[in-house]
Image (cartoon, rainbow, N blue to C red; front, side, top):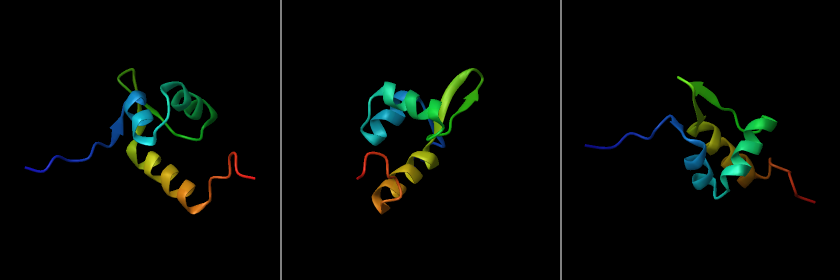
Length: 67
């Protein structure tokens, strides 16, 4: 049986997915760069948002730090 990809992940898992620290994920959530949702009091990050962040960065749309 194939395991389905999750729709949401914990901030710790989101950090691992993009190669960042947990504090950076919380910073990105606070700034609105990465959306988050609360499900029963638990903070979760949509996997689709992380994938979009990666696509945008790869295509040059993410200009943070670029000069």
